[in-house]
Amino acid sequence: MQKKQIIQFSILLVLILALAGAYAAIRSYNSRQAKREEQQKADAQITLTAFQPESVTSLSYDYDGTQYTFSKEAGEWKETGDGEITLDQEKFEEFIKDAGTLTAARELEPDDEEDYGFDKPLRTVSVTTENGTSSLVFGMKNEMLGQYYLKTTESSRIYLVEEQTYSLFNKTAEDFAAEEEEESETDTDAEQEE
Picture (cartoon, rainbow, N blue to C red):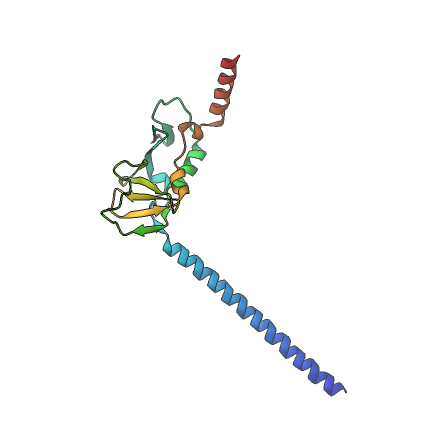
């Protein structure tokens, strides 16, 4: 009877080892597939901007009919419009960091007959780094896709970009104001209401 139990135990042990090996192989395969899919997504994205925040010396864009221009003076970011707003340096540096990693969903084959809206752009963003100035020009929105046409000043290529790429620049200078600046504006508004 013991010999029969030893054989059964051996068979059971072999089955457990086989299942454990199959499980490990499946996990490894799934992990490789996930990495491959991530790489394919990364390869499919087209880099529009790739600069280090510390290399940027000025940035300008238009929003709601107002041109906002920011420049770095003596290592500190300032809004060069009315100059009355003290910027939260960390908040603005985070914004510059986001602007430095923009990607496009895809590149288009330009069609001469199609209107992309570049004759009256919705927005132009200019970034000056130590290497020079480049601009992103946003054409019209493709309502069917919910994406914007975009081209850069460096090439004639036309790209489609997601809504969040366009809306990244939906900010006023006040959106970057330092906390004490925001508090003093709120106090001033409250005093004027009285």
